[in-house]
Length: 400
Image (tube, rainbow, N blue to C red):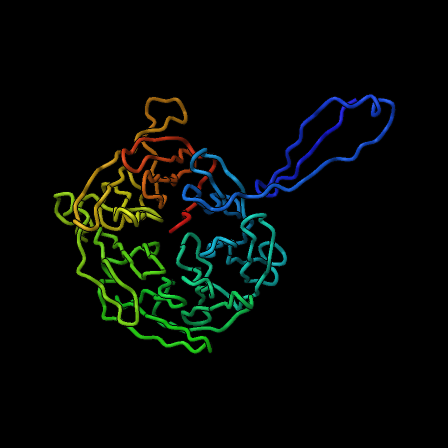
């Protein structure tokens, strides 16, 4: 006789069973119930990263040291993920319809326990912008007191949530602006169509004050990538444009945006222009750059292309020193055979992340085409391991 011993793995979203020989008592007809327990996630570390689901509505949790998925967080339509600053909770802004693709629409923020992946709270929203892959559509403030959700009801606005009370606190209208870049406690900035920054301060009373910086980029001809870098506690930001200009900024009541520098010039090349037929090395992808805070290095996915190829994934990673504004290394992305055919080409990587440990950081690369996702040594560019079924249009890295 045989019995099954099953262990429910909440963290991995699966059921693991093993088959063992039954005891003599069971062979005589005795009954024994299944044994189950619940697995838990280890605390967030520098080599954990999160991706949006490539085809399925979930966020994957990955261990970069093994290349294995540790768990998954359920999610609704074109959802966004944020991590509490103290790593206690994962938060998801999402949308559902009562009949799948139709019926009553439900917009909400779901809060999940970061250890057990159990649902803590669902907070109903008045709405949200249904745009996937934009990590700055949903953010948590630097002090963890508020969450911000970008909506359009009917104008561009941001709903803020009181995370202590776990309720909607209010709405801030930011006409002509979009996205959320948290800075200094519970404040945030947005990028505006006139090339300026909207600086928003939300008081404890819920009253919001909105001011604007001077325009600093050409939104019509050289826009800024939505998934640019921000360090919420310090307000330090690096805004990357489609042609490869880097705008260092310090967000605050009086935002300071420095003169931009060119990635191509840092490599000893001419800056990329906006001519339709102008071929040049350009950044590209949904999340084309990642910043390593301890070293000041910027890792950018680059490809050879013409203007408006900003969504095309990279065939090289360029490593730049943001202090000296010089190119340190170009890392060609080698083919990873998937079919065994001689014409296998390098996969196009549209998403990059970097771990924040200071000694030996890792690069995470996700392919636009699914499969071929890898972990690399950020210092040497050596591929260390493949990552199973990562996929997705965005990466969140613990410590960013």
